[in-house]
Image (cartoon, rainbow, N blue to C red; front, side, top):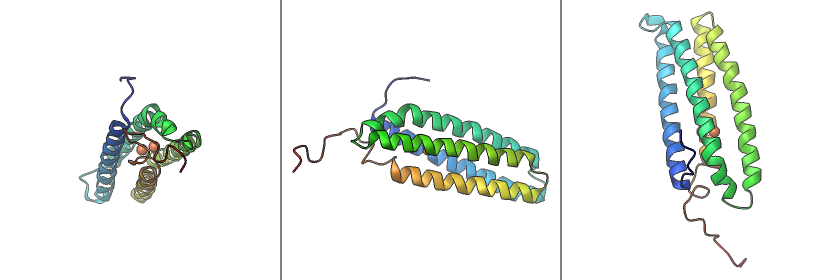
Length: 153
Ligand SMILES: [Fe+2]
Ligand SMILES: [Fe+2]
């Protein structure tokens, strides 16, 4: 992994593409859990997929903390407050993710598995949508950070 600073537009592009991949994985996980009754997918496969997803999400959050945090910190005067908020959200997401992935691994019935996978997918879709609205946009992650009104109007 490189520590090189990325341009804000590049950070935005990469975070958005990671979000689309995560959503794809969530759809596959949901499709898998829906097939539990058919016998083509078993509980162990769903549990392994959920565990792999947690690893990918950890990499994704670490990428955002390494590259998106510096960019949104520098975007305007609200940077430090925004960064505190993002770190608090990630801490909450890590707790929820651990809780739900543990529930998936410990699920002893297909219904329990379906319910935990559904909760996990819902939570992550809401988090992604909110994060894109708040941070991953052209207003904050733009390469041309010229104050819109440099002389204070
Ligand atoms: Fe995030
Ligand atoms: Fe994200």
